[in-house]
Amino acid sequence: MGFRPLYPAGVLWALISVALWVYAPGLLSPRLGVLAWHAHEMLWGFIATIAVGFLLTAAATWTGINPLKGKPLALLCGLWLVARLAYLGSNTTWLAIAVVAETLFFAIAALALWRVIGKTQSRRNYGVPWLAMGLAVANLLYVHAAWLGDYNALMTAFNIGLVDMAVIALLVARRVIPFFAMRAINGLELPMHMGTGQLQLGLGLFAIATGLVGLPRIMAIALALTGLISLYQLFTWKPVAVRSKPILWILYIGYAFMGLGLITAGAWLLDLTPGTLTRAAVPAHLIGMGGFSVLIIGMVTRTALGHLGRPLQLDQSMVASYGFMLAAVCLRLAALWPSSFAAGLLHAAAACWVVSLALYLWRFVPWLIRPRFNATPVPSTTVNIRAAASPRRPS
Image (cartoon, rainbow, N blue to C red; front, top):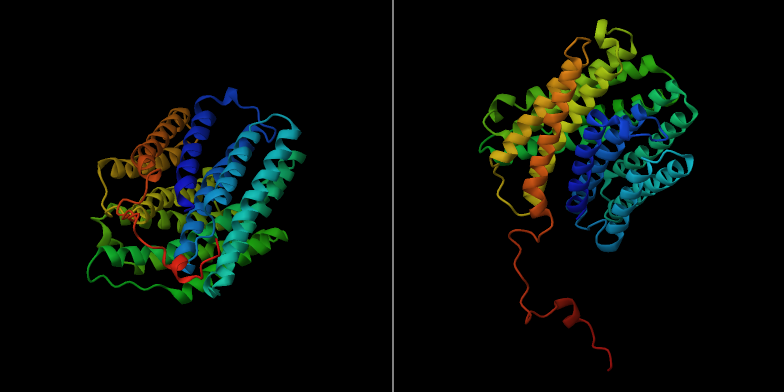
């Protein structure tokens, strides 16, 4: 399934790319430019990669059909790897290779999702393949702006990609957080928020559309409202009830950061953020690190345990990975404030980030490369029912 190769690949790349960006930037000379490369690899190389892995896995649950497996899944992962390496190249040829590989990565994933969702008429998920394809379009706009050296167009494209990914994250999290919580805590009843979820989705898509046509103030209002809805949903999911369940509260914290980040992004677009908050990096890191990355460390743990047939219980390394990720977020946000401690805070944030993701890889990679824990081997004497039911071919 999609999560098996893409979870460890995305996590490992997030670890490596941040370590390079913070500790050895002199080794980097990408055609995009070092800063643009860092932003790109965090959003498309890490966050969107984990999202694709999750969606390919979730679609199998939604539809009963695995969208990609075997050689097609290997091809998808190969394209992802080519893109990651080619984006490190310092000339236009390597950049072109990276763009083609990355566009094919998202296009194939979107088509695979559409194939199974359309075939089973899973209407509530019809928008998912289009959102996956939206990541490819935003990536093309971003790379084109970087190639031209147009900073304003670059920021617009990055924001479109960020909001597209936020819509995917909110759509998924709104479904799974209350479901996971009710499964884990006996007697807990939580609303699924179908109505506010539809409004949230509509506002997110409206924000993308207004961003594309150059209406930042209208986009800002849509983003702020989307964030407010997220915080309202979170409040109704009884956060206090999950305080003793790290596998749940990590998702709650990520969802809270997502809501706060969207509200801050709206305020930033309206020029309502004072002092240091006027930096574009503030909403980007609130959403990207506080929202996406915290949700990711929780989701790649919970969903991997579930799909691998493991008990839904955390060991010390898993809880520690959550703690280091939250420390990384707090330290990185603190480093955005100009001070003599900024560089030290940034390095400390990167160290916590690396440790958090390394702990995940150390614990989960041995499981991800092995068969499902509770899988029952098929005896050699078992008859293939489908084959037995079909007429025999003449020898």
